[in-house]
Image (cartoon, rainbow over all chains, first blue to last red; front, side):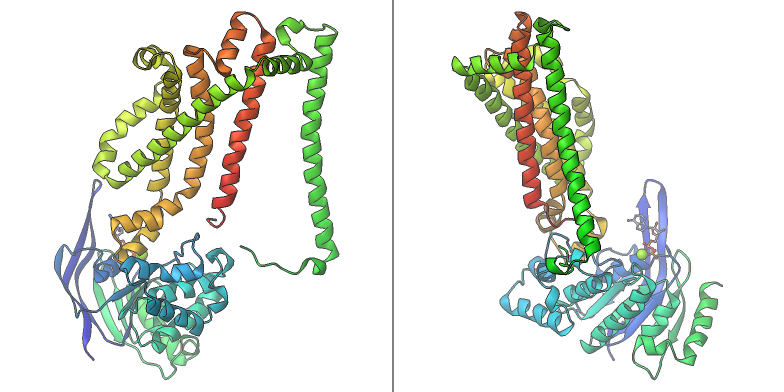
Length: 244
Length: 273
Ligand SMILES: Nc1ncnc2c1ncn2[C@@H]1O[C@H](COP(=O)(O)OP(=O)(O)O)[C@@H](O)[C@H]1O
Ligand SMILES: [Mg+2]
C-alpha cells in the first residue's frame, strides 16, 4: 500500500510572549492508504499540533511533511455544527467554502446523509439532535468534500461513555465503508485499540514517537474488539508505555 | 427547535396542571405590575388633589393629561415629539452603522485594532457632554448638533460591543473553517457575522438607551424644540406639569423603541442557542 503522508524529522515550536514551547520534536512516521492509524499520547503532549501540521494548517519549524497529493478532512473534538444552520445547510458548508456547491455535490452529501441515517434531521437545527447524531452529522460534513484522508482529533471525547462507544463504532463503520484512510489522535488507549490497524505511542511534551504497534483483530468492529481477550493485553502494553 | 412531545390532546393531567399553574403565575405578575402603577398614580393624584404635597411642584396625573392635551390642541405635541424622535433615530442609525463598520475594520486588521485601542478606551471614558461647547461651535445650534451628540454617545459603545462580539468567535469553529481552506472573507461572512448576531442585538438594545441620552442631552445644551427642550424650558419657567409630561412621553417612546428591538430579536435570533 502506498504512503499518503510522511513526517520526516518534524519539529514544531510555538512562540509566545511567555516563551517558546516545543510541541513536537523529531517526529518520524508515515501512514498508508486505507489504513486506520491511531496516535495516542497524554493530554497536552502535542497531538493537536501534530494533526494541524498534517493538515497543513501549521508549518513545521524543522523537518518535512510529505503528502502524496491527497486531500484532508478534519474532524474535531466537538461537532462544531453551526447552530444557525440546519443540518442540511451544515453539510453544504464545506462545499460553499471550496466553491464546489454544485447540485451534483449537494446530492452526494445528501446521499451520504440518507445512507447513514440523517435524512429525517436534514431540516432540523443541530440543537434538536443528540450528541451522537451531531457527531455523525459532523462526520458526514467532513465526508461531503470526499477527502482521501480523515484527520480525527479526539472526536469522541466530548461524549458521555455510552454514547462514545456507540458513536465510535458508527464512525468506524462509516469510514471503513467509504474506504477512507484515517488518522485518529486520542488520549484514550482503549479507543485506539478498538479501531486501529496501527498505533503510535507519543511521549509527554515535546511529543516524540515512543513505539509503533501493528494491531490486528479477527473482529472488524470496535465494540466486538473490546470483547476479545487480546484487547486487555494490548491495553496493558500501551498503558505501560504511556506511563513509563 | 424542540420535538413536539405529544399532541395537545395527549398531555397528561399533570402536565396540563403545570401549564395552568404557569399561566396563572404569569397572569398574577401582569396584574401586580399594572396594579402597582395604578395605585401609585392614584396616591399621586390624591396627594396632589388634597394638597398633602404641593401640586405646583409635584404635578399630578390629571394635570399631566391636561398638559399633554393642551400640547396636542395647540398642535405642538407632534412637532416636539417628531423633532426629538427624528434626531434620536438618525443618531441611532448612524452610530449603529458606523460603529458596526468600524468594528469590522478593527476585526479585520490586528494592527489597526492594537493601535486604536488606547484611543477607544479614552474616548469611551470621556463624558461626551464635556464636548458641548465644541459641538455648538462646530455644528451650530440646530438639529445637526443634537444628532452629532447622539452619534458621539452611541458610537464608541457600539464599536466596543460589536468588536467584542466579533472577537469572541469560537476558536474551534475558526479552526474548522481554516481546515476547509476558508478565506478571511469566507470566515467573516459564514462564521463571524452570523455568530455575532446576539451581540448585534444586544448592541442595538444598549444603543437605544444611548440614543435617547444623546438626543435629550443634546437638547439640554442647544435646542429650540423637542422633548428635551420642553423639559429644560418647563424647568426654567417652573412649569413642572410640562416637565412631567415630557418625561412621561419620553418613557413611552423609549419603551416603544426597545420593544421594536426585542421584536427584531425574536425574529432573527431563533436558533443560535
Ligand atoms: N497556538 C499556540 N500557541 C502557543 N502554544 C500552543 C498553541 N497551541 C498549543 N500550544 C501548546 O503546545 C502544547 C501542545 O498542545 P496540543 O497540540 O494542543 O496538545 P494536545 O492536543 O496533545 O492536548 C501545549 O503545551 C500547548 O500549551
Ligand atoms: Mg488536543
